[in-house]
Image 1 (cartoon, rainbow, N blue to C red):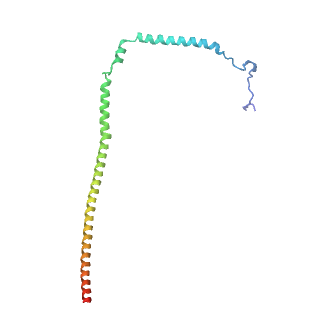
Image 2: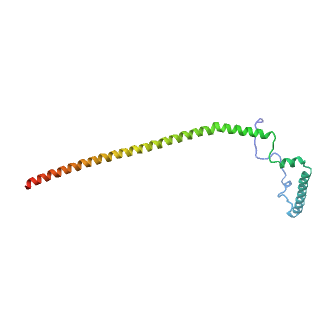
Image 3: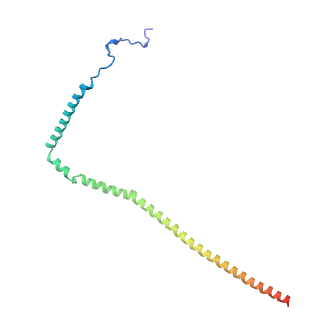
Length: 161
């Protein structure tokens, strides 16, 4: 039993309960407020002094560099080369395939539209042929009716006479 580990919920070290304060004592707001105002005024004056010193002791070259509109140093040719490379790459990889796709699609649409107009012309020709056949059939019917009328008229006259 001597080699067994035993767990217990009781603390081994006893802590005196009267040594811990029951509630922390906070300083009152009246004593903090004047100190805070004093610290803020010190901070503002120190910030103002630091910025004014940085402007006074700033080298004049910084003022001239900030006033320049463009920097004509080594970055300009690098940017130009990057721009030209990007323009060339986008032209070859994106815009050329897109342009050929759009041209092919446009040609396909125009071909379909031309076939539709050709089909409509064929339809018009077929309608004219159908109308011609109908006119010919009506003319034959009219001739046949006139002949029948003449025959019936002749029979009626024979029967009357």
